[in-house]
Image (cartoon, rainbow, N blue to C red; front, top):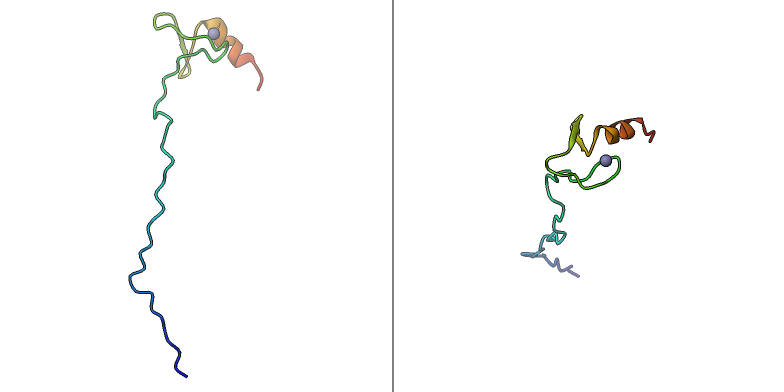
Length: 67
Ligand SMILES: [Zn+2]
């Protein structure tokens, strides 16, 4: 009895195409205050430590707020 070796010739295995599209933008510009979450206006915004706040008061509230 001779065993028949079924060779899987040219097995077309399609790679799984990732369907999940990256919906998140790469660099999202901060538009809201970190403390009070109000929308930041272009003119009036307080920049501190790489983050934007609407006022210095909000910055102090943010850094004083414990996690
Ligand atoms: Zn604020």
